[in-house]
Length: 162
Image (cartoon, rainbow, N blue to C red; front, side, top):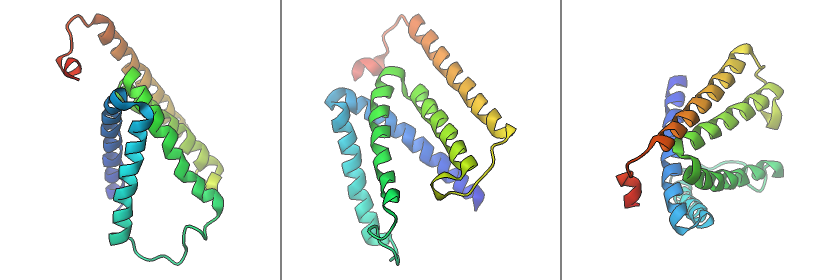
C-alpha cells in the first residue's frame, strides 16, 4: 500500500507540472488571475461532482471542524498564481523544482515540530542530505537552462507557434 501511495504521489506531482506548463501559457495570453480563476473554477466543479457521486457520508461536516483547518483551502491560491507567473519567466522545470524545494523544507519543519496536529518525525542527517541534494539539483537545472538560453541562436518553433 505504501508503494502505491508513493506512485500516486509521483503521478500527482507529474500532473502539477503539466498544469503549471499549461497555466503558464494560458496566463501569458489571458492574464495570471484569469488563469488562476479558471483553474479553481473548473477544479471546484469537478470536485463538486466527485463529492456528489462518490464521497461517503461523514459524521462531521465542514462547519463542525476547527476553523483553523479551513484556512488550508486558501493556500492553493498563492501556489497557482506564483506558478503561472514563474513558469512564464523561469520555465516549468526550475519553477517546479523550486516549489518542491519549498515543500520539502516546510514539510520537514512540520514533521520535526509536529505542527498543525501532525505526528512528529524527527529531523535527521538523511533529511538534511535530501534538502541539500534538491538545492543542488535546483542550481544545476537553473544553470543549465541559463546556458541554453544564452547560447540559443535559432528560434524555437514551438515557442514561435504560441
